[in-house]
Amino acid sequence: MRLPLLQVRDLRIGFQTEDVVKGISFNLDLGEKMALVGESGSGKSVTALSFVKLLEGARVSGRVLWTAQDAESLQPDATDAPQTWDLVKLTERELVNIRGQDIAFVFQEPMTALNPLMMVGEQISEVLEVKRGMSREEGWHEAIELLKLTGIPEPVRRARTYPHQLSGGQRQRVMIAMALACRPRLLVADEPTTALDVSLRGQILDLLNDLQKRFGMAVLLITHDLNTVRRFADQVLVMEKGVIVESGQVDVVLTHPSHPYTQKLIDSQPPRNVVAAKSNAPVVMQARALRVRYPIRLSGWRGWFKAGNFVAVQGVSFDLRAGQTLGVIGESGSGKTTLALASLGLIPSEGTLTIDGAAWQGKAAQDLPLRRKVQVVFQDPFSSLSPRMNVQELVSEGLTLHAPELDELGRLRRMLVTLAAVGLTETEFPGLLQRYPHEFSGGQRQRLAIARALVVEPQVLVLDEPTSALDATIQLQVLQLLQKLQRERGLSYLLITHDVSVIRAMAHHVMVMKSGKVVEAGSFEQVLNNPQAAYTKILVGDEV
Image (cartoon, rainbow, N blue to C red; front, side):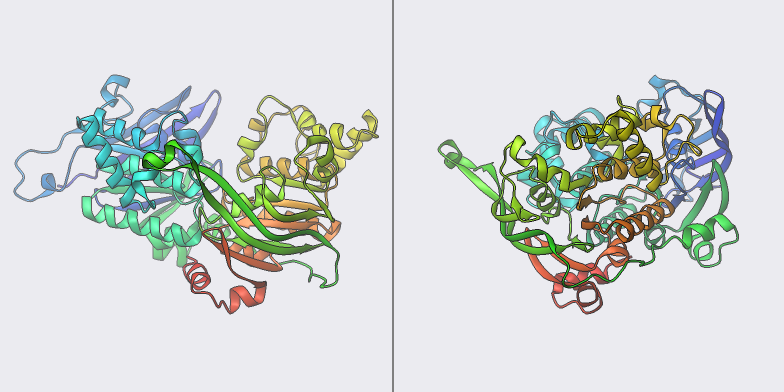
């Protein structure tokens, strides 16, 4: 009888007095693609991390049976029966040969998983040297091949870069290359496409699918994106509050769900609910022939005498009017985030960029009035919110700088009104002002980040991937909140995203970027419903 690669039996995981996984059981076969789906806090990631004891301070009980096997051991004429271990009972020393080699992980946030002090090629090579016994030279060449395999352009040059020099999507592909280095039997992919645009998301899923077939490995995909599940997985487990509420074949579960929670996830596609933009509304942000260059080191002897330039944004022009949303879409590395940083005056740029008619001067005192008019909401609120500051300190920080005319009572009143506007109240969260970011869920932290930006009453919000790190139902709530705030306050949004569904829900006008250039621009209806550029057709057509 063929044993599954992984057998989970009555797995329970708790922290202090609270159980977060409550007795789940399932099997995963070698060569199978399974998706684990649920909202933030449902227990998906901790379930996978418990397999190799990567949960500090957790109580883990039940059994996680790992059967060492490969394609040859499953042949009918195989003589040796595969050996089985209970991973829950193994010691740290016994797990060393399983971590990374038999069970490998692609984590959700590559910037925290990669070493910022090592070139990415060195980090992949190090895995190959330690786990597969390669020499440094062999490991380096194999690392370049792995980067090439994951679709990173110029893999030889990229191997010599540091994580911060890569885009979010490129960093995620480095993580995938590192996980695949030892050809694991089980690849746990925890939100591997969260930071990727539509076309690259499809490419990465196709890549994982091809590698899974080539090496016969099993893949456990942890995700909140049901479209990704439909495209990739064979089987699906739906988790709610630490319990598997539904499981089965993907086409059956997602077409005819039997549990209300599964239906709730399916119905969480963001609807479009925005007020039609006025064509004669005043322009609050304007760019003309905007250009951003980064210095780079030239290869060979030329690099001894002069530096080169990498042009990240080339000749971009746009008008953003009051009460409108300009959606900027493109693949990772297209220049979207660089455009956002230039719009915020955080990096130098050439050409013209004005906020309410005034240009950035690059001097703190002179730029202070503009910083009140334009605020930003970043992709990952856990990184953008200081873990050492409570809610009151985080939200009041901007008021202290930009509204010195308010006294302590005025600041408190403004904070509470703004927090209530984003759905954070003392009634629902007792002791709200004294809480810290880690005490909130991902969606609640993003609401807090929005409140921190709104409290100074800006005219423009730059939204840099504001929902990409959130599960589908929370994404829906945040988008509905942004729609509501725009209707009530007349806010203008510069929306940076790789998600076509977010553009459909929010944007009045759309600008499509590729390799730093605008390849198509126009109204929401023109660009998404009747795209002219071949690249735009790919983005819209590849929406999974």
